[in-house]
Length: 395
Image (cartoon, rainbow, N blue to C red; front, side, top):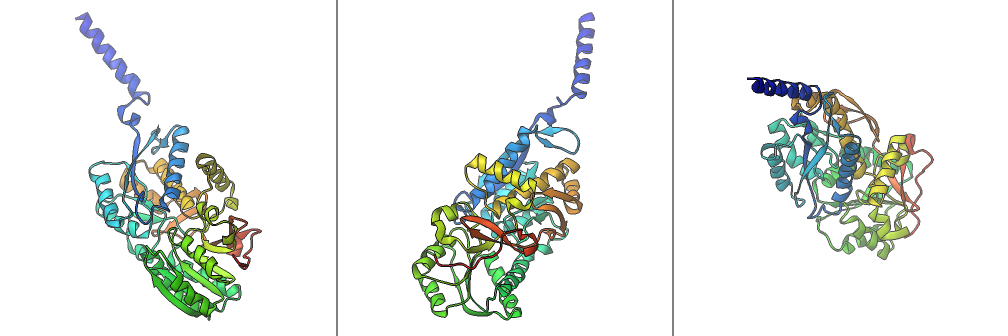
């Protein structure tokens, strides 16, 4: 009897000690965060900048003890990741698997607007919140109450309006418009045409091309014959270098040359050298914005031995910062997390962010220019600091 009593008391003592500490089994399990990434396919050149930011965030949080879960203590982060092959349909299937089979606790976003658009209905169906980053579409504003939010300031209508104003302010009267036929670039084109007209800027060349284009000689020859003040190439990391090489070969001399996505990535000036100085691109972040931004820039550069992409790397990291702060407040309950993201104000490398619907309207839409091989925030002037737009002079 004494032996049974001692065992019973020992068991009770063990339970009491466990209840009074962080040894409860669930707390010891890592927080499993799932996502797909474009390791292969047409978006593969862009995906590393996003994945690197995810890895940096995970390692930083884990080194500090883990992710704070609604005031109940910290847990380490573990990623569950699949290659979506740059295929939006495949991404949708992966996210359903992450939710229903892998039963992850949280989600991070895939790369690109088409993939986000494919995943959004899955999030809606399972009421699973996710903060998007490398994507924006005016159509996604209609997701109400919505289980996806966008940290970017690069919504197509906002980019179009701001770019047209920037062009006008720099004396541009005519443009050539080259458009990759992927969804985001097409949507941007649809808003850009009336925005240019409103600023009394003439479109003298207006051509589209496929995402897997290998030769732009025909399109760029048309541009050269028209001799516009500005060239706007609504391009991606795969075709932006092609434009730069062939524009140099043909001697395109417009003083304003815009490439939508690519020049803000570290590989771009390394690959193409000083010839791409003066190229303008989308971007609303720079390390000089605030101390938090500089910390991110230095940590990323040290970890990966390259600079972060000023667009996608920054947006990916911001989405992680917001998720971290929302989980610290609301925990892992999906409804509580949805409310925390929808109503909260978050401290990020972009500055303070509060969502209006699914959109970050706190961050100003901006543009970067490569100057001496470094992307500089040159627009809007209110956040550009000492950097100013400089007309492109040769290649």
